Length: 124
Image (cartoon, rainbow, N blue to C red; front, side, top):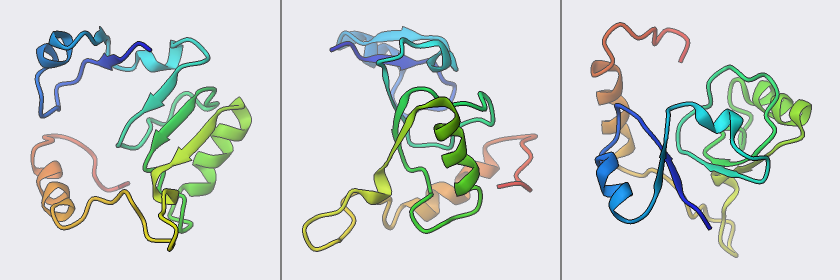
């Protein structure tokens, strides 16, 4: 298995730490042209393009409770033949979610807009 990490100006661990453990580094946004059998793992929303999603993606798709834009996101997977493995559906035998942001998510959410100068947050 090969682990490829995309470059990003927003990360907690420097890209060199990933390289040090043998991960490949790829330019930001290059997942779009990754080999078809690549599994894309992420925690953030996908960009609006490409309109057709062809890979398998594992992330918080925010489609579990019919959140805004959920049907648009799912339509993109259907159009491209890709698959969304939404972490919100990962539950234990009692139906309790196993993956969640918890207490600190609110703090991260509050800090994100303030660190993104010039970003248009009105659509989020």
